[in-house]
Image 1 (tube, one colour):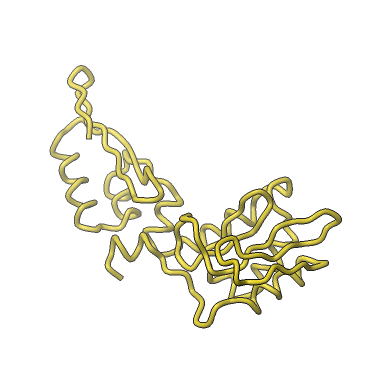
Image 2 (cartoon, rainbow, N blue to C red):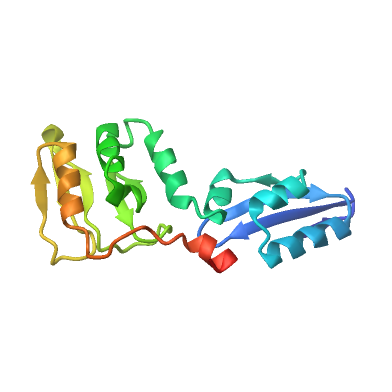
Length: 184
């Protein structure tokens, strides 16, 4: 919270660990800012806060994570990415598998990676899919060298290899922010 006496405004920024700014805005009274802070600290859902105090602008991503829909939001975002960033045939093939659709997807350097938790922290025991020359795919573990590297001729085959290599009891991903904020 920042006070700006020359403008008679109190700026408010709501933050979430791992995501950053969840919402922001300014009000002309300290009382309103305190009410927002109390609501946030009490665990009031971000969407309700945005409705109650319309001067706040909230992040759709933060709302999704706060509602326990971070996986769903991330998949929707990845499904809209440019083909220059990720091969959409690969995304479509992975999304078609319920076992992978329930995990938190990430894209990096044309690869599709999966996490058991809705955070972008490094480390995963789930194989990732990387593009190779000639439209082929490499299925590897970035963190567990005991998982053998495999190659696939199609995106569908690469996805099947990942599903076959899922650790026992894998999924759905834990909605970390939702659990932390709402003790769900």
